[in-house]
Image (cartoon, rainbow, N blue to C red; front, side):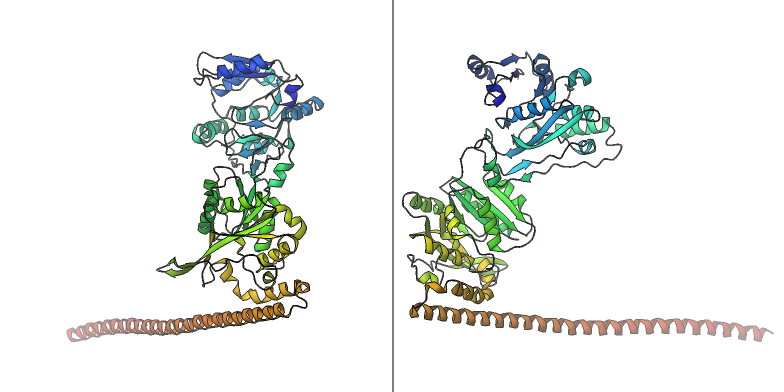
Length: 565
């Protein structure tokens, strides 16, 4: 509060109510009081509810406007001045409220938070207020309202403010300011989340105001995402950024994604942010939330599948780090991976570097994938000619300064495969590239198409040809490189043809199986028809026998009667 612009102008009074706390906050407050004016402190003899403390402070206050400041939340330095200025110039408005960033870190600060979510409250509407509390945790209101409507109900411990807004909402003008003015701590151990009391009190209030009786559908407030670039653009932010941004595109592989993210969280180097881009797949928020205890995972989503280049570009756009690293959701970093790369880049003139990676070959056995072999297929110092023929740097090995992309551009959206190779060629035309001969990461190879690379083998020939044509100026006059490119194209073409034949064989096998199933189905159908016919015949014969029996009984009866006559 002492960092608020209003306080520095001498226009803010801070009232601290110590509700018989056993934490000895009095010593802390006395230190502040000795240094800063306009701080009022009162300690109660016994514990009282939150709203009883609010009422006590309101009655003591000298200001025209009131706001609350929860000990675990933070305000933007000019937040109170922004809200007070609006009330000053809009005399018909009684209450103002704004949006907040959401952090999972206690004692986080506005200047340095890495929050990736926010409360995005709607404009005030009483009907919406009946569905949920929409004023957020940091509103400001006129003190005169309490002379007109009374104070907060002290019997409540968690939902008293919601009741007050319902009490005044139909008759007073309440306005949302479309700004982010605070930082809300999402404390899972706090009263709001850890205890059922909040919901119990809310239900009591809804019943009291007839909202339950009218069957008004309750609504849950859902946080909105915040891009790193948006966060840094907010006022009063420092330049505190993560040193490394790790970009992870994902689609429909939640179990693999969890392992990939954990491998980043387990790094010996900790100054990182993890940007997960869901490229039109199933939602993975439930996977990431338990892993995001440090608040350094940013989760972004595409509404539809746009492919890896677009997903990585989305991550690059949101990245705040000086360095960018890449990880596919089916790969993993070893604990020293980021530290190894950062150490070289920080202590040299290089802006681009890469390490070596293990290739883990896997096969499915008894329904589970098992690693059958591990090798390091690529461990070459950078060659500015060979990179024009083949890619020998797996994308997870790479790290570069984000600023490099200002000169080279990001991933080519026209390439569904070899997009990483294309970027490496462009980086190599602008920057020197360092090779660290250490194995620091691992990628998975499966032949069944379940990994990122093996799934797209049939596209390699097409994109290789695009890349060769794109950079033909660098190989002109070099017959050896042209021949090497020609051989590589032929190899890809043969592999594509072989892959196509494999697909056709698999289709034929499936078709043959379908035919077998079809014949079996026909036999079953014929057998069923025969059984149905037999059953019908038996039923018919039974009915006939019954009719014959009836006729015999009738004839016997007539014969008997005739003999009697």
